[in-house]
Amino acid sequence: MGFRDIIRLLNDGLRMSEPFNLRSADVLKVRPFADDTGSLNVGDGTTDMDVKWFGGATTKYVLADVGNSLLQLEDVDLLLGDTDQIRLGDGTGGDVALAWDGTVLANEVAANSFVAGQPSKADTEDLIRTIRVEDDFVGGIATSRPQLAAVSDGGTGTPALRTDTAGGVLNIVTAAADNDYHAFSSGIGSFDFVGTKEFWFEARFRLAEANTNESMWWFGVTSDVTTGGVQANALGPLATYDGFMIWKDEATMAIDAETSNAGTQDTETAIATFVTNTWTKVAMHISAAATTAVATMYYNVAATEGYTAHGTTMNLTRSGLVPGALIFGVKAGPSNGAETLQVDYVRAVQVR
Image (cartoon, rainbow, N blue to C red):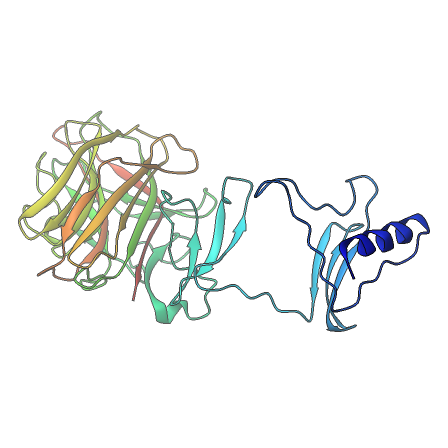
């Protein structure tokens, strides 16, 4: 059957409102004048019809149901290959997606997103595939968290779980004394950066400074939790440790970040400006590169959603790294004002 015969049959069928059938050996091609232009429409958005494709039986079909704005797969599987995505959202390329990368079910979003490639809890084998330390601070005893233990000099204030904030908030309180520190830490060995395993960390918090520019707060993973993983006064994190740290030091409102292999640090200063008494988010992604991992810092200092990626990445040489603990805390400044770090949540995820 030639093309003219097909057109004639189609024309007769449409003119007489009869079905238009082609034999199984017939081939119908519809091609545009230029590649990737135009579209093949069924209906016009006002007068439309359902489209139904059968998969070898009346009980197996894919139905585009116009009346219910529904695409129905009945006893038909949807097969996606490795790295193929299910995209959700109206953003370019989707706001968020799920993809099987051949090993884990991962969240897939824009390439510069903090959570790009992060394993998803939707994976039924998430506990097998990932290491997670996370706390939303809902319920429990603030001084003895299931995954976190207090690190302090013994004279600090009493931490407390706030009950007046939806979702839970942990107040970490210092004493009214210069350099008094109070932190919470997971166990040493929680995370190991030696292997080529991708890692994500994020936290949401705020701090209404007792004295402007005097407090210090910090979040990170460190192999040494001595004095909470930081030094006295305005010296920042410990001089030698393995891991990374994000912090605001005394005498400044600038947010800094660094990676560290023993006494070798790659530090980025003044990444953003901390705003007192404002919900703030910080995050760190460490790549799976084999010899030298790439660490990217993300932040949001405006109490809004989303993250801004710091434009300059940091390197972390994997050789010789010692496993570390998730840690976060606060330190009082020289005017002896007691500080209270309010932590909404912390989360650290590493491919196992």
